[in-house]
Length: 232
Length: 343
Image 1 (cartoon, rainbow over the protein chains, first blue to last red):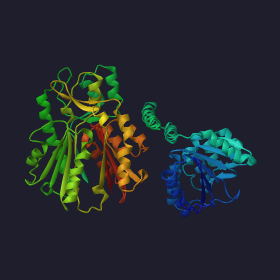
Image 2 (image 1 turned 30 degrees about the vertical axis):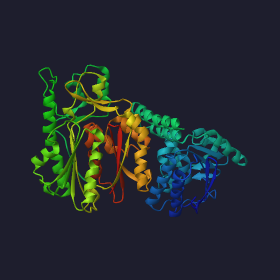
Image 3 (image 1 turned 90 degrees about the vertical axis):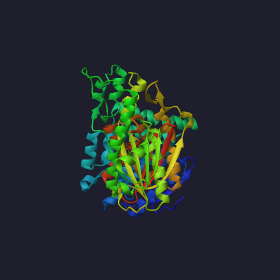
Image 4 (image 1 turned 90 degrees about the horizontal axis):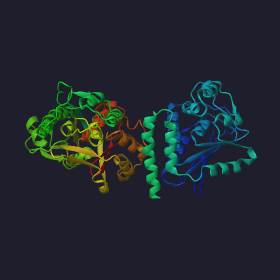
């Protein structure tokens, strides 16, 4: 397993738990760690469920500087896309303020669990730049009207409201967080890596594909799944 | 790899072809319309007074294969040589790939005569390998150039699919008649150094994977007087099940992972086969954009299709030095051929 400066990786049976120890500023070091992490998860381990923890700010109201170079944005999106295309499932665990790139990563995960004291916020547009590819993802979860409100006002969205909007999948009390994580893991297990990868892809494509094309895509993806299943 | 490509001048839309073939079967009409093909270049006889195409004789079809192959093949060769900055007299090794007609003397001999190539040129004809044949033909050219420093190799893939068809209003022949187009593509290979990505990639290696249990899945049938191609409806899915094997084997040879491949060139075999490979390798619609464009504008050009797509990639001017390209062709055998290149 590689060494990481900005995150901890703990592996247990079929689960890789990644705890992000990020400051509020993106850096070359963090991006290099994320690249190494995905290389490891894709190539070196057969674990099929990633639990991402630490998706909340260290300080509840800490300022979040904007990315300084677009190259950071490119590398960051490369990482988020790899989570989005991972052959396995991912859970985001949030306990506090989830904003900026933490919110971006949370929305790319398959399942989001937050404590009731958590708050979601997307203030980037008010700060003069764009909230990454959340601009693309948020409307798919919550509809374009809600997405506009959240993105344009930058107003905090309490966890209860996020659950009602479909941004969040599971809510628990802070003192019940560990039990909540176990419940989320059990909800997604057992994970069939290829089936979840293909299903996620077809769901994402369903917004932009004609029904006639989608049937062809589904049959191609189903062919892969049945072939893999037959080999097991 | 500098690439040239040419097609016969007449281009037909799928709707025009439904009329010309006088398609009466509703299922066949749907097949033509739902193929993701907008137009194809074909050499078809002039319609009669009723707007129907006259039946072509076997002899006429073979003559068409020879005449059209020489015409569009010469154009593609001249383009590729000009792109590479060499002349026809510089070519040391010449390979021609075709499946749409058996000639003796073969096409290499006829091109050498027509284009006044050198009499000491080395040559090989690959006949009957089908859609995958372009990459099978590229291998001896690359090997010759690797063994003979500074040598110039030339590969031509030329298919006159309108010289090999039967139309009988059945689904069996309709699948093929709704799909294939005529075209020629040539590429110049050399071991001379080429730092310019616009001249194409360096060829690093090849891998092959044949599926013997599916030997009859794609084949030429003879109906007593003419040949026609048969495609098993299940073949796209079978290819999807097997494509990872040669791709991963080739990547492993060079210590690479699939995610480092920036450019993918697939044989434009049809909508289903592109979908099947795309989902099997989990590559995106953007990755196969050139493959899809070639299918849309030209139909399935058989052995030369991958070079048409590759030409579009080079013209896009997006490939940077150090980028990798994976070329994949599929065809009778049933077989999957792969080639890894580096810009």
